[in-house]
Amino acid sequence: MMSKVADIFPVTSWIREYNLGLARWDLVAGITLASFVLPESMAYASLAGLPGQYGIYCCIGGCFLFALLTQAKQVAVGPTSAISLMVGSTVALLSEGDHQRWIAIASLSALVVFALCLTAYLLKLSSLVSFISENILLGFKTGAALSIAVTQLPKLFGVEGGGRNFFERVENLFLHLPETDMTIFLFGVSALALLLLGNKFFPGRPVSLVVVALSILAVTFFKEPFSSLHLTGNIPEGLPTIGRPSLRFTDVDGILGLALGVFLMGYIETMAVARTFGEKNNYRVDPRQELLSLGAANLASAVVGGYPVSGGMSQSTVNDKAGARTPMALIICSITLCILLLFLTGWLQNLPEVILAVVVLDAITGLIKLKELKRLYTLSRSEFFIALLAIVGVLTFGILKGVLIAAIASIVYLIARTSSPVVSVLGRVPGTYQYSDIQRHPDNEEIPHCRIVRVESSILYFNQEYVHERVTDAANGVKDLRLLILDLSASPWVDVSASRMLIKLQMEQRARGVDVRIVNALSGVRELLRKQGMEESIGHISRRVSIDQLVKEYFDSNPFVADKSHN
View (spheres, rainbow, N blue to C red):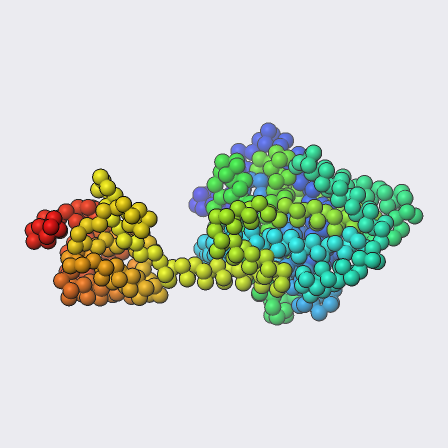
């Protein structure tokens, strides 16, 4: 019973071993993390079209519950740039410009993400996200970074932004560049330079908090020179109110699509971060358990008025470098943010909006990985073009549709590859008893009156005809063929329809006087072929017999063929 509780609530395991030494590290890490996510979460909230405090609410609720359920020791959750942009762009349409409805829909989407996480956990669907490949994520992050940048650049130049997609926003920005407010621009560029230099020379430190503090002090004590700066304004003092979202699922047409996209992106990113720090710090993370922890984080965010959250690389890196030893660092971060909301909100009202844009621009620089794209291009052109499709899709149609387009293209590409698998003709490697592809190794020896074929894929209903044609063509290429060997070592699965095709193939070859043998079939394939009665016509399908043994046994038992092979 206790082990089952520990599986669901990992906190019950690590809290028993908690001591003062761990607490010291977690205390420093938690306070450092709070200092980092305070300006970052406010900036991301602006991307979602929400007041800055809602980003803080996300961290307060999300970090606390995530810490109780996660197996990851350094992963920190909160709003991320990509999810914030996805929420902002989608909720803008769903809310029809009503600000209160905007807030309610954003909060409701976090609740629906929780429901999706819980459903996926109960149905054990953690592996389904594997359909969103790393290459799609690479393209998605690049496209998202460019989309985010073009939404923030107008704030840096102090001009009006607008446009339905990336290209319209770029066009609009260039049209308004002559109207640039030089005070805002110089203030923002100076802050961005400080951020970039600070991150270079003081990595893992809350540099953004220092820049935010300096900008607030500058605006507070030198009001006249910076009078044209737009400020964030009043941030409500006190803790968020706990309660369910004011809207119901049935009140918002389109909420499921938004939540599904956020769920996929959030879970994939959370698992990527969790695996990264798990490998670095020598511990294992159960993907299914992280469905539960991410769902709990989104539930907590929803009930405090926040919007969807996920594990983020930037905040997790800060948490790790600051020395976090357990998820207690997240609880300390949550408590620290509560203290800031209770006593220090008066200072935050003088925070210039351009600083939030600068924080976002600095954060997204790590999303654009040109070296990885270049390397992908050299390794696989087809996979590179899928990543490129994700970039173009995100820029043209938005984050959610862009990712779905790339995912569908990736699945279509996979099906296309599987529907036309490689069917290799094997020959004996000179001087050995091993066999390999003759096309790749022309010096391999062909066995007279024998054709050995390897199907390098599962054989399924949609590729069975292709496999049948390729094997038949290979068999027809040998004069006076007596033995056809099918090497199924590279075929993990054969379905019922394909098994019937193999029986049909065997009957066709027998009518030509050719014996068919199957070698190296895996256990599941052997079992199915036996149930289909194939052993009755071709003999025992053994896991112990090699290709060379089969060739030798066949020709030893057929002297006429053996003699003829020496002629």
